[in-house]
Image (tube, rainbow, N blue to C red; front, side):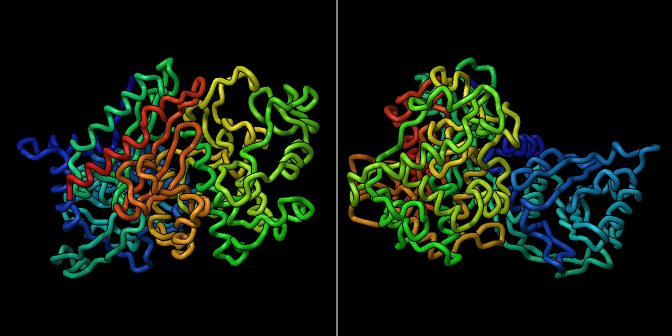
Length: 602
């Protein structure tokens, strides 16, 4: 069994401890003390064009350049929490391969972040590299050292993040400030060069998640240790081979750990950057947020009917179903339609071709138009037995997918990627992950010996979604815990993130609020259960909570009362589905630990 600590935090704490070995405080308190000193001595200069905090980070091509800065690794690690950033070592550009080659190698990047210390400022070639590139690209200088040395940057008009303190935490702070993870609150308290004088500096707002320690939100790190115990219990009981847990409070990620392995073979340790099949979390992470945006654009009315939006339903018993009935699972739809057990030998092939273009898994290709010929008629002809009652149904979100695609004119995987995941700089989130990531970064969800005859790695676990080619309204999204946290922090922020508005606050309030007396559900979102004995999603969660679980052993819960986002990702379905994750109450018990830690800090 492996338990992978949040590496960047440990690096920062270790570095700080080495510099302050006589400090009697705990590491979390020491971190906060140093961070406050860093905040008070970090100033942003030359930001008249408001480049910092960076906007639309997902659409930027970013490079980070360093020469001899001690904490370049920590700096770059934090940058990569917010966007994909490629690192270049300027020391590689010496001799015949001089600094001009660096500019050539960076020609396809539109944003360059240069880390400097006092020694680096003596390199006139590096300074010229900055002044040359600032004319044609977004250039940001992160300088660490004495302010008097800034006179060597008099020709630099690009923003300068000036940090006087030389600690790993200063590196962390500056990197986060560039993306708005932390706010810049200080101006120069004295004149440091002829150009940079008393009172100069630009203030910024916090616009994205910050990465910190529990003490930053008043929680003692030790009070979260029971999360480790519960995660170990889950793995020892073979409830899941491993998991990743993330906690964000007050806009700060204060806990993010990976436990166990991809499989029980214990060969590949889980990492916090691993990508999981989030199963039914897709319902809110793709389909519902898309519906929310379409409502904001005036294209979707939740009181309108399926027949209004989908002509194919008009001569069926689905025509009069309202959108809000679909979203609350009160449309009377059956839970699902038959899948692999109804497939005929002529419906699939081991090889792809024009006749068999739909890839279900390695060596399994479905015939053209199978969804249109078989699956859609099965949904349209299915009975409505329980209309007005709450019956959880995957068909509801498959129909919602059709509505989203009809109104947007775009496949749902493309629509949600463009409108949310890319704009939010969610680096791993999306459908069909094997098109973008190596299989080794994706946690396997099942060893399907019956139908697909292979491990499912990067192919959706849900059989209905699989037969739809991996893109469905109810399942199919894969993501890392950090990306899930970004999406739901946006919702916790009432639709805002990174300085942009994604969904109107009133729409967030509508969709995440309880909708009827029939069930606890919101529109798309699952909610806190008022029946106390169920302790759902957690014994201590507030009635304001909203989120969703996933069949593969996942969940996300947002609690506005406590300004909290909780993410749990696992593959309890590997190699075969286990009920132990639920019977042992692993997810809610971890959530309870978080609430108890918050209560102790009050």
